[in-house]
Image 1 (cartoon, helix red, strand yellow):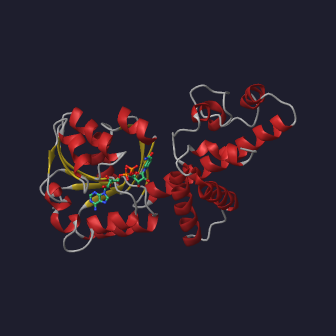
Image 2 (image 1 turned 135 degrees about the vertical axis):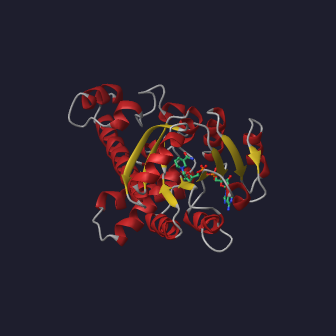
Image 3 (image 1 turned 90 degrees about the vertical axis):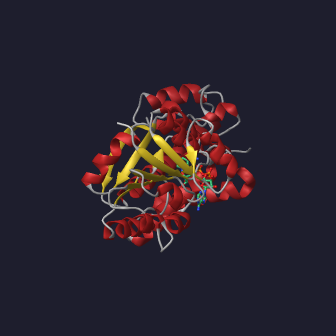
Length: 296
Ligand code: NAD
């Protein structure tokens, strides 16, 4: 079914996501602070508005894809925010990766006005956004999730309902914290093998068939030349940038502090990625932590 949708925040992720909504036959109105970003989506048939509220007024769905929690708060809250401008028949979906506390705060403000809201951060990166194969991790009530799911399916292939408001953000940082730990662990195991005369290709085959098997060995081997399609074999061009992994690990640590959770491996991974980024490696793929552990 075709819906009217406002899409706000048309950067690396939001631009291709909005284009997929237009291609799926929805009527899309967009807004971004950067005119060139707006043009990429109006070029394929979206219309544009002069402000976020201008795009959001009177539509079935509002979707935002913004850098951080402060942008999300400023767009949604306050007398001139989106929540003050839309009716209770509009569903709002924030796909940005932000701290769970802000997601819960904005979700509660929406609920007070009778507006259904989901936090729905994604994984799959820019390639997944362009291909329409993102995974969405949603937080919100059942009815809002059911209404939003068909729209999210135009942009992704796995749509999960993690729990109430904020649960989508928590699911996302749990996954990325685990991923960072797996990447560091895989890198140091490969380094140890190489330092002791093993061929990384052969060692990878052995660990893939043994109990060390994990996603990084399956599709994202960090040792250059082992896997032709992996960023490691393309000078660590992203992929998923160190800076973005560092952002997500920072959110994971904030959440761990708020819930008094013990996350020693995540804390160490954040520290390693911070040190790597400080050496000027922030724009490389996150598998380049393999370089950090060696002589390069
Ligand atoms: P980006 O910086 O490319 O895009 C953000 C866009 O938001 C920009 O075009 C900016 O002009 C716009 N914007 C900022 N404030 C605004 C406002 N007040 N009103 C309207 N537009 C505004 O960032 P991105 O890479 O698209 O990432 C967006 C979000 O998705 C982030 O939270 C990021 O952590 C998350 N994410 C990114 C990736 C990735 O691989 N890039 C993967 C998963 C999740």
